[in-house]
Length: 117
Length: 191
Image (tube, rainbow over all chains, first blue to last red; front, side):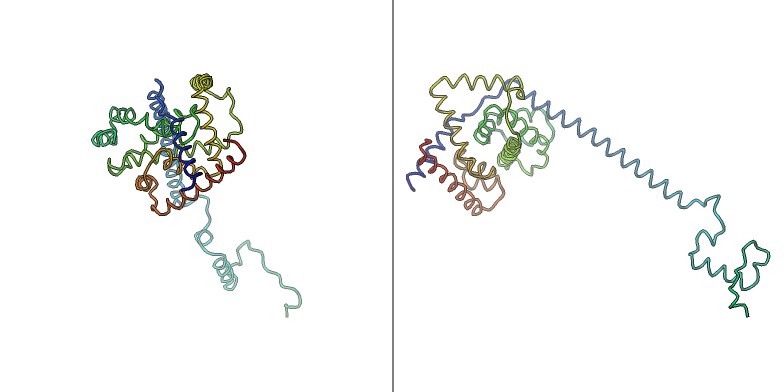
């Protein structure tokens, strides 16, 4: 061990003596309990907040799920509500082919003159 | 152990009286350790209170009462580390920021400086704190626990839950840095 190492050990010993054990003040224990109570009340508030948030989210989920299953009053025929765009086009095409659209208000498609012969 | 294991078990079970007894038994030792870890007497009580609050909330995670002391040391080191990090972020320390009790403590410390012995102690504290600035906060705490508090490598292993060899390497490097700073201070006549 070098001389400097020995001196450093001695310095650490002096440092320990310079920082002796401290006697706690009279407010030490009340201070500890004060902090514990403060932390506890904060976690209680946080707990309540988290619980209400979960309840509100669950309620919102239920409402949205219910809305999805209840049929809407103002909705159109089944085909329009649930069919895809391609299904609707096919249905419209079939209607035209069978001449069923004669009485309907659907406008006729006018082809350009070149295709009329 | 300063208290019986049954008392720790009782405190673990939520017995406030048992917890009070545990704090009363250990507070002086913890205050001393913190004072050497952070090197600022005016903030020691604040950090020690934080240690015992953390102990209160983490006691139920303690597996057995046998490992209570390393557990408490671990909490002490963590709270001191948080304090050192916080105080680094604080640009300056003003009297206006101090609580009434801290002002009284600071005054008594300043008053004690009139005494030659106390003046010497204060000089040693400042000098060692200056040397510790050459290592990280983690290394400062580890080195203090080993060299000043006098914990063995086995005890440190239990506190840090780190392999003994890894601790040896870390301690050696930290000590070398502090030694270099000491030699530089000696060469500059700062001793």
